Image 1: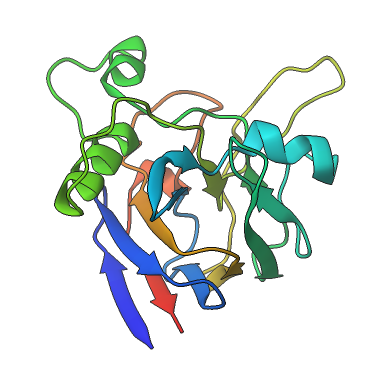
Image 2: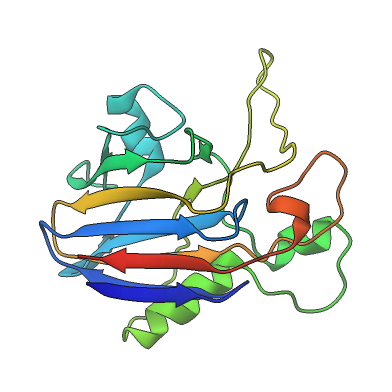
Length: 200
């Protein structure tokens, strides 16, 4: 078993072979985890939530769902979820521009930047930030299609488990969102905390 701690507001990459299991856990609860995956033999093929919706008929991932690449090939199967389905596949990875939108001045850590750094450590320069799966992220959609992000109540120790269906590079970002924006709490209390990855 390989175990990796993702520090608050940072990202980490891990290689997962076909048939192996990867789990992502929020030890303190309520920490959004931006999850990305690439075909390790061709990083131009990445996990795509929009391509996945067409076959799962759901905006939220559930156990049994198969996550597809942008080439519509199976990459992972979600095998377990102890976070009560509190996940999102709509929000783009945060970036410098999102923090400026919320009024931040200066450079701010982001899931987009964390992805770029993690992939650079694996030897790749990427030019596209794919749509992530946002595990442990509470983003309801109302009847009129509006998004909100009310209090994140995902319990401590909650996690998800997936099985790799091809050899992958997976990246997990502990979302750095810490802005005090009314009705928009990505992380519990808007305080980023660590995440845990296990591969077996």
